[in-house]
Length: 211
Image (cartoon, rainbow, N blue to C red):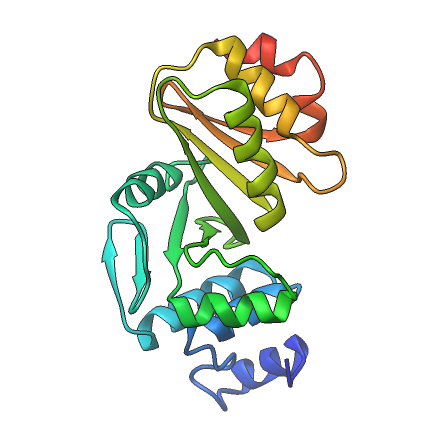
């Protein structure tokens, strides 16, 4: 970013700018959130983006104009808004924004429906890849969801939408979790979200917690 957060803060205090962060597009929000800003600045930037960027909303889900998504992804996103103590806002960027972000990240992934979540308390930004699991999916299929999602985003959100055995689920998550690039997994199992780290996955936490 062109200016430091300290400069933005001074401008805000001095009243020189009504929008000290100049965050008026989703791409600028994405860039701003990479900075180590305090929650009140992240919240301000998020709200400024919503005032300027064309979008429509469905509760806590924001669809930037031109975003592409399936009904299944929309349903999973609605559930993701409930993750954590305070919940999250979920943003579906448009195709062009996702392409530019991938260029910035030097990512070869061609997926165009990544989402970004914003914790309602801290407004911390997280890139999330949604994976839905249907009835009858094998251990290998679940492991593949985890592996591929981990290559694309900081968090893999696994939404169980069918009848899967508890043991197959645990084994699939564990087999797909890669020690080098899996960061976190959000698991929706029987209507409850579990926020999992690699240490949890490779311990007996899953057996003790997921019932």
